[in-house]
Length: 569
Image 1 (cartoon, rainbow, N blue to C red):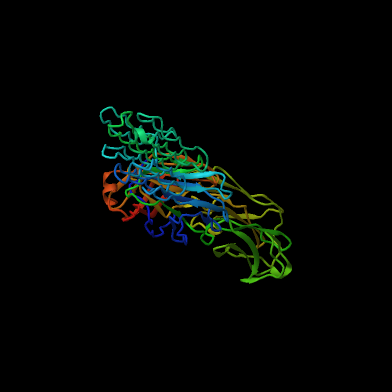
Image 2: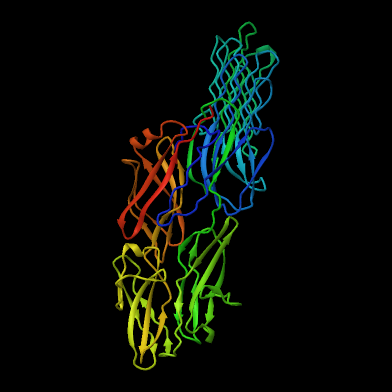
């Protein structure tokens, strides 16, 4: 996949809606790192577990009189990160024709002191682990241009893939041109003489090889330096002649440096930078947001003095710490802060509820269960709490089993969704609908003897699995690929159906895939011509409605923003 534009900054994006809740999602953050000539660092904020890196390698230097330097590569990749981890960022510097190699691995130009100066290689732009020992992403630098001293020299190779070596210089009479550097790290061949380019390195420093420079007796064009990268580009060979009366041939251009992306990356795309300049790095991430409820807290157990109620805490986004408070008529009960609570005499005739407080570094969210009224009278005794059996799938039937009670009470049923009664559902069975996807489902059984009633609520069962679209923004590649983050909440895996994206008309489609329950995954949807036309201008953006058909209860609609990358101009 290729992306279209280089990245001095990325489009500021507007947060959208998740599939079945409207979370308070913080706006995406973009952090640019310009060339500084020294090591820079980025510390992963609390709660951030992945980041997208858009890197541009530096261009190679053009020769003083000769070939043009190659442009750097651009790499875009999303990588898992660890909160508080400090990543090392090296932004490549452009090569020059003044004997200065580009920062972060550019190879030196050849120099024999006679021919005009060749261009040095451009440095790579790289992201390394906190220790600096492991390379995560690299965008190769461009190779330097060779000189010709009147004879056409070689041009520096562009950074990126191995098919971008530097070009050889051109012949002149009995002269022999210097060979262009090879991006596999091999130096360019020598001209008619003995000085080839130097091979590039293959270590983390990934320096390009130096260009060749012939001796005075066979002076020709100097070779350009290789670009820095995962494998440094080879330096261009020097041109030359064994005939002192014949002008030496052009030197070869240096090869561009190779890109690299770690195996754990996703949403990978590559291109060439659109300008010959220093490199740049842009880090994009969605900051941690306050916790959001995915499934509501509920109460289970027997509402009777002396029996225990259980507060089922629900599920939450943002990995929060959870605390519990039991409430009597809306006020906290002193010391009642565990997930279970044994009903006391003081609770008779009162309303009991559980309050769950979820806290992370971004904020606090509070949720309270619907209240249960605790009867004053003793009522029938329960020996085994009711249970629910059946499959959690749209159209499946759940059955409420009464449990074990003393005496011969009469029974009434109520089915609950997130602790509240579902209208009209008062029999021992319940057929799940799309509305139940991702919700907490329970059955409440009320047993009555001689006018005295006791209610028992089953433990919550997960409704059918629910697909949730987590992304609020996405970047669009030149070929139309868009990667969004999706998650599956519920007791079973989500088989994600074919999806479409609309913005007044269908602009993108994607096929089916499976997401494991409780996990998230990246899902690529590809724009057609209509979608690409809407995002042709760099930095442009559109609001998109992401649609799943009603298949198995997955989906619903989500609104998010798609944006093209801005250019450096």
